[in-house]
Image (cartoon, rainbow, N blue to C red; front, side, top):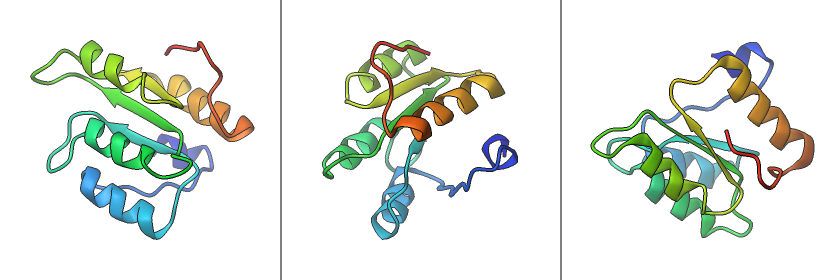
Length: 113
């Protein structure tokens, strides 16, 4: 809802498998995924997205699970054009990352959130 209030068009999916199906039918400018999801987790989802040329920019977020959130996010940030966002995060943090991508088409190097 935060991004919709900011004027962005948002499509939601219940899990990675559903998200990949939606992306296949209509590629998005940016993908935001949780790392811990049912059916297909965030890591598998990001890997599938990155097989496409070029893979979309991704914001990976996590509050942890069986594994501490830092571990999930550490892996995600090495997957190319992926930024990480630990939960909980502020409205300003998510909006800033989305704006950064939409302004340039990719994420600046060296920025960690």
